[in-house]
Image 1 (cartoon, one colour):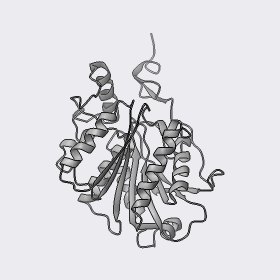
Image 2 (spheres, rainbow, N blue to C red):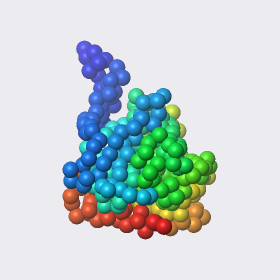
Image 3 (cartoon, helix red, strand yellow):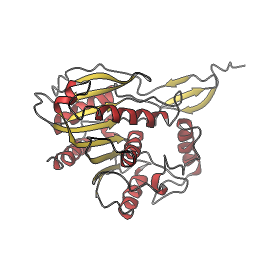
Length: 316
C-alpha cells in the first residue's frame, strides 16, 4: 500500500503536483537567477526585502545610464498563484527586455504562493509591496534607485495571468485606499486569469475542462465561494469599474482558454461607467503567455513594443 508521502491528492502537471501528506512538487518556475547587470541590455537589477514579516522581496530594475525621473512600473508575475517568482529566468529576462525597450524603472513583486500560503496571501503581499514602493514618493525611502529615478507622478501596474488578476484587484484597492504621493496612470493586463461559472462568448464549454480550471482556483483559494467569487470573476463586484486610473491595455492570445474572459472584461468595463480608455491587443494563433516562453517570436516582439508604447504615450 502506498504511503501518504507518495499518494497524489491533486495532479496539475505540467505545473505542479500535490501529495496527500501536504508535499508540493513544482515542475515549472523553480529555477532562479540572481540580479545584476544584464549583458544583453545593460539593465541593472537588485533584490530588496519589502516585508520583514514575510521575508518577501522585490526585484528593482533601472535602465542603463538612467538619469532623472522615469515612469515607474510595478509588475506582478503569473503562475496560477502557485508557481514562478520574480527571481525566475522567465520574469527576469522579460523585465530586463521591457525596461530596456521602455526606459522605465520597474519593480517586480514576489509574493507568497499557494497552496502553502493560500489566497488572499498573494493579494496581501502585493498590497504591502505597493505601500513599500510608495514610501519612496517623498524621495526619502530606503532604496536610492527609487528615490532618485522613479517618477511617482507616472505610475503603472501590470501583470500576466494570475499577476494580471492581482493587478486588477490592486487597482481597485488603490481607489478605495488611496496611497499618498502615488499618481496611478494605467494598467497592463496580459492574458488575465479571470473565470466564471457560466461560459462567456466562445469560451470552452466542456464540463471536465471547466471543472479542472475551478479545481486549480480552489487549490489557490480553498475558502473561495467558487468560480463566481469576485476575486476570480470581478465583473459583479460593485467596485469593478473603480480602477483609479484612466488608461488600460488588455492583451489576449487567440488560442488561450482565458481569451474570452479578457474580451468580456474589456466589454463590461466599457459598460461600467469607468470612463477611461481601453486598448485591446490580440495575438492570433498564440497560446497563454506565449511571449514569456518564446520571447524572440514576432508576436512577442510586437507585444513588447505595444506595452512600451502604451507606457511612453502617458509620459508627461
